[in-house]
Image (cartoon, rainbow, N blue to C red; front, side, top):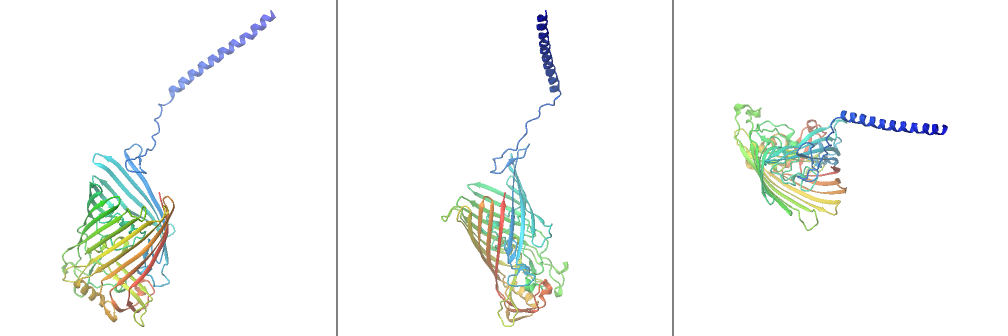
Length: 510
């Protein structure tokens, strides 16, 4: 009995445990089913950013759209010597080479960052593109936490049209690089790195052949000053070349166009521009401020033409380039000396032509034209040539050499009007003759090292000559007080000036 009882006692717990386990499992299934019924609908898979291969490397689809976007940009830091930022020659009062003034900056610095945003969408009319490049810049002399924000380009392209701020139709593809240099001040041709507001249309004919026409806003960028020689001018003009600008309002845009052939071995371009010259009123008796009843000269049209050629398949080595352009202007001087360059050039030096003189000086005035009371507008003319050769020593080292020559000429009537005004502003001596014609020539070289992709260190040196045509001397009365410099009252000789400038810097592109 006891044995039977023992067996029966041991079997009963096993039966109970088996039923408990099965009951627990059934309960768990029931609970799980109930919990699953309470869960939300399964979320959609994450939509990852996809590569857009339609427009080249670096484009991605904006999630949820059919628009592709590319983000890029750069950071650039420069130190500039004996001039201004971006290797600006010392051809103004503030940085004039050779003045040796105690308040002169012998170096300047600039740090610039730029974000480039490019979007493209395929439509039934073709690609719709937008582009902008906001810039943030900090220069020598700015406060520790201040700087400027600029915008070189901001435009929409649609069905062949470009609307907004973009590269001028006049400019060659290599124009903004200054013929293989980093300076923004290689003159002798159109070099507007900041873009210009425009409405343009481009035809693509195939095989690299294209044409473009544009209406461009000339209000600031493409206007050199217009001189009313009958108007009383500031005394500072005799040593700065800056006179009162007598342009009127903006009544007509510039009309610009080009034809271009772009091949693997070369690019050729022919450009033309028409530029309206709209004067303010004549000066009244004694050169007083103009009023409407004084009348005004009739508008005239200036023009510019340019031919450019870049050779890209050279026997000197892979990637080498030879860039050339020639420009002629008639009443449209900023197509020859353009962009941020300015419209007057002056420099002092210790060298003199006559005993007893204090300094030598060059004074050059860039004008679209000259007029006097009762006369028509007399346009200036000029021509210029630029060239640059880029050679790659290796995948990481390259050197360029570049140069330019620019000539500005006043016709007989313009010279007579200018010289009557210029001679009266200060005493002249030592056989003074007045001639506002001038030349500027430049030569330079740049070497760059790219140790890793998109990181470049560069050094550039440039020599500029201000070749002026006045002779003799003039007496400047207290020029220091007028300009904020320390130049004394003295005799200054008209003399050509040579200027050396340079820059070193680093650029990281991303």
